Image (cartoon, rainbow, N blue to C red; front, top):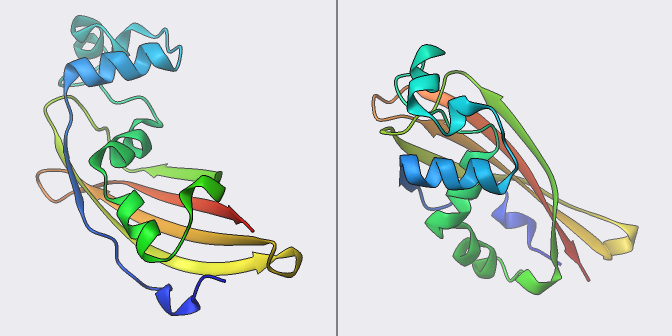
Length: 146
């Protein structure tokens, strides 16, 4: 069982530079066809300062930062026994190429189901840009199978 004492634990901050090439690659990988995600002229015509990040990009970018895996191992979670249970995003402004975002996450709940066969770790994150403006929030549930 994951110790409930970890509720409230803050994970290491992830600081991420948002790059055009990474945004284009991600858009292609998810099958995004709207040109605002791959063509800077189209993005600017739509009112963005540069290519905007597709809606789920910040979660993948946070995973790339490498802060989540060590935190889960510190909780004693065997990552080979985990599933990505759910993900929620709330956006307050665009995230675009050229931005530097900071993701600050903490564990907000740990609970179990099926007599402990399944445990759930809830992580909530706040995403700010280089001006310190909150641009998004994420809520993620990790499922641990025993």
